[in-house]
Image (cartoon, rainbow, N blue to C red; front, side):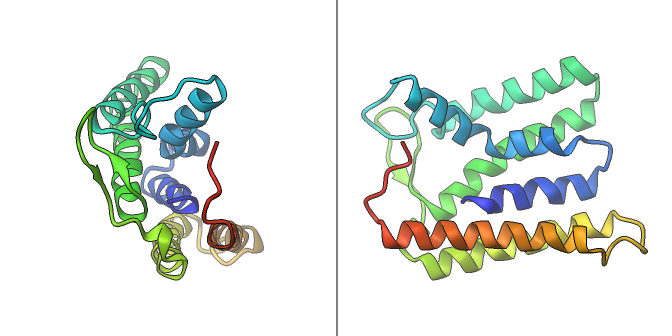
Length: 175
């Protein structure tokens, strides 16, 4: 999942407006950012995503993200939201991709990246649902503003672009 992760983050923002959007976006993207950082640092494993997307890695990232947020804000409910958003990353990726479970364990997922049209439809639905929740958190007079609709348009455009690029370049590696 690509832009769908941000759709989940903005949905969480709509449910709990006191949470900073940047923290939710980081939580929603954390495994991918860890994966990219490790890749750029030359840290690899035989199984792609083992250090960032496996069940143990998601557990570590979830606890770390929640504790960092809790330590800096003292917001227990917000910390639980951060944890849930990190976990949502893995769950969403099991729908769209193939991810490792644990060292020596199976790769699991529906691998919808191989079907860009279906991937786009599912990610667009996630983005739309998150956006609708986010939009509902605005005062009635701002819900139909250009800025609010621009968020939806930008996320859908990013997802469409990702699906087009990866469908035209199936061998393209993330790193």
